[in-house]
Image (tube, rainbow, N blue to C red):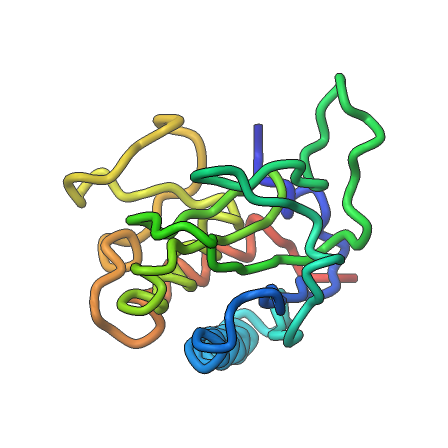
Length: 191
């Protein structure tokens, strides 16, 4: 199943929000994420000639479209499943980033509902994983050249560059010209 955003592409940029229900102590770091997404947006538009992403600020917790389970998210409104047809997104084309209330040891993308989440501990030390996780929402998978990363489902999606896959310390999480260029095929230019 391809990521939700692939189906929601209309030619309008996806809006990237941060969940306003996070603790006050993490808001400064979240602002850095929003700024990084804005920078990514500019780099993408400069390279491919049109915008596919914009930093949209804060979204109230009541409008974010999901709840938390012990180690994940739940009741994610983006999931379009035959058994739950009434669960649809209130606003197509949005991405929501959040910090899970538990101290999870990872950052993750949930492409079925366009959500990025961090555990509290890792958010304090690895907030710049945002670019890597956004590319998962765009349909990218880890490079097989980087060991220790899952390849599930294997063979499905566009391969990230080695640097983006590894999230190496580099401008914008290691995103390369080739990573951005591949976005043209996934999200064709608007008419």
